[in-house]
Structures are given as C-alpha cells and as structure tokens.
Amino acid sequence: MSVHKDEKTGKWYYTGKYRDLAGKRHDYKKRGFRTKKEAKTAEDAFLLKIKGGQGRIKMNALIELYHQEMSNVVKKSTLDFYKMLERKHIKPYFDDKFIDTIKTIDITKWNKERALYGNNGGAYSDEYINHMYLHMSGLLTFAVNHKLLDDNPCKYGKPYKDPNKKIEEQNSVENFWEVDEYNRFIKTVENIDHKDAYETLFLTGLRIGELCALRWCDLDFKNKKLSVKGTFSPAAKTVTSPKTPVSVRTIDLPKRLNKTLEERYNRKYKLDGFTEYYYVFGDIVPTYPGTFRYRFRNDLKKTNLKYITIHGLRHSHASYLLSNPMISEGLIAERMGHSIEMLRKTYAHIYEKRRTALVEYIEEL
Image: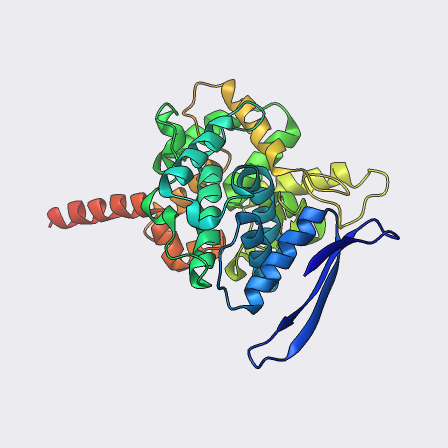
C-alpha cells in the first residue's frame, strides 16, 4: 500500500496488494491523480470498500467513496452540483476530519457560517443553504448505510435560516402575482429582450433552466406549440436532460405569446451564423439563469409591486390556472411538468382557497 508519482506524466498513483475473504492475494493500482493527497484519499476509500466498510474514515475519503459508487446512479448534472458543493463548502471545513467526530453542533455551526459567508458578500438563498445541508446529510447517511458511522448527526439539526431576511423572500406561498400585478409590471419593462423572457415565463410556467435551454427548433409557430426537451444546469454549465421524466412535455402557446416569439424569431434569424439550433434567449450559447435573475430584480426595483423572485412567474402561472375549477389538475400538472402529487404539494395554499370557496358555495344551498 503506497502512493507514488509518475515522473513521465507528473500525476500520482496508488498501488498495493490485499487479500480477499477467501484469502487470495490481489494487486491493485490506479493512476491519474493530481496530488499525493488525492491519491492517498482514493486509496483509503478503495481499501474501506473492499473491507466491507469496517474502520474509521475521514470526510475526504468518504466523498471519494461516495462518487465511486454514485457515478452511475446519480444524474451527471446532479453529481456535478454535489462536487461543487463539496469543493466550495464541505471540504474546506471537514476535509481531514474523521466523520465519527462530527457532531450535530459542528454541522449547525458549519451551515450557519457558510450561509452568512454568502456569495461575493451577498447572502445565499434559503434553497442553496438547504442544498448544502441536505447533501451533507446525504453523505453521512451513505456512511451509515455502509457501516462507517453509527448515526447521522444531521438528523438532529436543520438548515440555517436568517431571521433578519425579508418575510416575503422566505415565504414561497406569497411568491406569486395576480394577473393585474403582472400586467402592471410588464408595462414598465422597456427592454424587449427582458420583456420577451418574462412573457414566456409567465404565460407558459417554464422553469428558468428550461427557458435557458429553449432552442428555436423547439418552437412550432404554425401549431402554436413549445417543446421542453432540456434544462440548463448551472453546476454542469451546460444544457442537460430535464429535471424529471414528466418535465419532457409539449406546451400549447396562447396567440399573444406565439406572436411575440415569432416576432423575436424574425429579428434574430438575420444574425450571422444563425441556425434553428440557436437558443431563443441567447445565441449559439445559452444565457445563464443568474443573468435573468439579475435583470428581473433590477426591473422589479423600478416598480412599487410586491417582491417576488423570477421563479415566482412560474408560481403565478400555476396559481392562475388552479384558480379556475373548470381546468383539471391533470392538465395543469402536465403543462407544469409536475406529477399531480407534486402539484398539490407545491400549491397547497391554492387548494386551501379552493376548499374554502367550495364550503362557501355549499353554504349558499
């Protein structure tokens, strides 16, 4: 069991021998590591794996073992996102710690520090903080399942929430506009590119990643249809397959939006090198989701409307459809790329209003 540097490539590798459960000896070797530490971490994870998970393990070795087993199980874009969280938030804090020494109080302190550290001086969103915490919990659950840890300390804590954050930013129930609020907002938007994007989000209910991934070949102006075939993954920095199988769908376009997008096409197809595979809200490459979020926040600051996030335009679309009892929830779920169960869970507040209206209607009897 040893780690060496390959003088020809400058990369590190590990090599050694072990005995299996039948007592037979085997050689092992793996190349291609950038540093001696990476090679040693990978070797520790490999040896723990062949020993059936017996023995103490550090966080860096656990992460290596996790990726060895999950690389063919988890979607690549999701795994890339996990690697980014590990690189930026988990390894700097827990890299050389034995996982059996990590307590709930350490997890809580870590999550709070990372949340307050923020991104370039600005606070991370609650969703991002939750992702950090949940992935840490996922790693430690993996360790428990492989008998590397007796219990998961994340079970006894919860993701950090900033008590000073605006209530409207925390409360997803309020993260939508009524139709008249949206109409007041869109009248104030002067930039045609911004306006086209907001109209598409509000009138289709697309996720922001789906908007980024939309190509001209996904639009059928003649039949007024839009096909969702992909989503943009910030972690992978590219377009990947949609979030779930039901996210692959075809959306019927209202005449107003079909006309807006057709006019946009007539402006864009004159660009040098244009093809049907150009992105509707980009060109040969897609625009990043963060760009749309930044634009929306700035455009919203120019009004006195209630604060919502750009994802709130999707919520607004769904809330408007759910307010009409004549439209089946099956059709709405299909349009949103949700299962009916997820639709009910996400928009529980709308269903509660419908239940109240139902009782009031019965009272009139």
